[in-house]
Length: 259
Image (tube, rainbow, N blue to C red):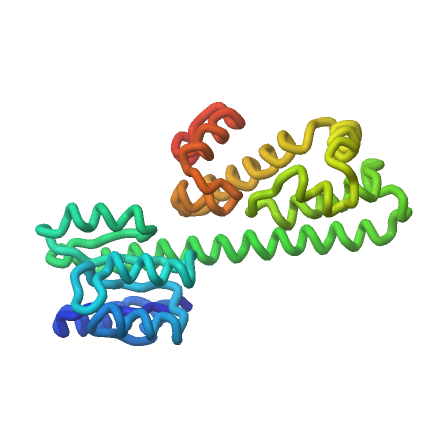
């Protein structure tokens, strides 16, 4: 079930969107609607929708300000902004604020709303499946490791390196440094670096990059996530740097690898 909040100051348009979405699919659930950005923000905090469809020009708090504020609370929320032709350049500015899509009010059709909401729903489901698979994989590995001698693990990794690899598996989405992981396994940076290279066959930074790229490759080929979203999902704040790293890893850009 996809939970949706509608924010639109023009009552006829707001009511039409609510009615239309409510009749598109049983999978789309309109939680509530609001007539201005401030009211919408309060409802979003309270109801925690997965998707918000909002007008870009509204009294009290406009769509761009609203997007900036709600993204501070929930960076993963999907925002679809509604705009007029005269506000087109203004809508393009909103992309940098993290909106998922924008629609021209006069051009909105039932199929447009369905396609966007269905695409978001599929992306959310794919992410949930991936998380479940990762959790199952980690739990499976944990069970196997419990049956192995406490001084050595599968592939003859030492206990320190085994803990380091688990740490990477759990924290790869975050900014991991050599110092962070060395402290986690209670080793000096220099000794950990030598031990990691000796046992794993490549240095820590190379292993981490390749690990992230494998995760990114899966998301690019099996989900509809935007490349910028994939970048964040695997620990890269800068999408441009992510694209360069991905091309170096795969030989093609993320966009080329998707199609």
